[in-house]
Image 1 (tube, rainbow, N blue to C red):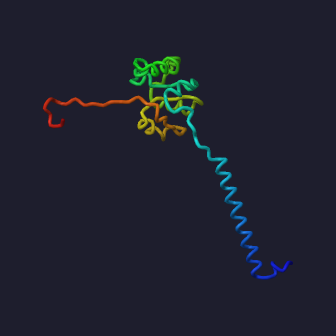
Image 2: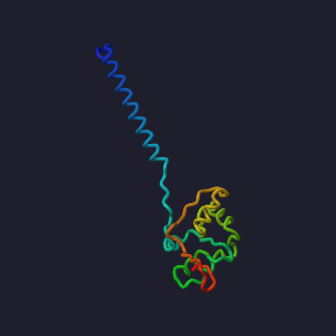
Image 3: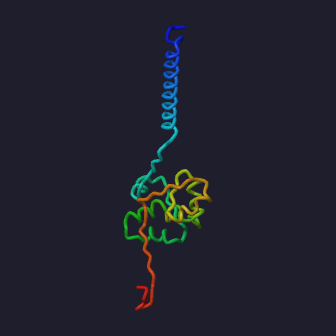
Length: 154
């Protein structure tokens, strides 16, 4: 025994040093494991241009839907390119419902599906995967309501 460990104050110093070392090592280990295990998801594309440039994700839309018509008949050249390269090759196998399309997103390794964000998240409990919105890839929508001339609700 050394002089330090025989004295009560020496024992306190050794015990305190040991506890602080243990705390430092365990917090470092936890931080390091967290860094290794927690991956930040980076989407493969952020908008329609990047989706088209990637070219490996077919774009699904509901068969006979307004979204399909938007891509097919759009005056926008980018939308036409997306239709011709990403939608048209699988035109005969387009899903008949939104749920079917979202299930394809979960089942297939690379598949993108065009749906309004609010509608997509209403299916969350029925899906086997988590959805990730591509917020810069959208088609602006407009809504209007017809009312009678001179209506008080104008």
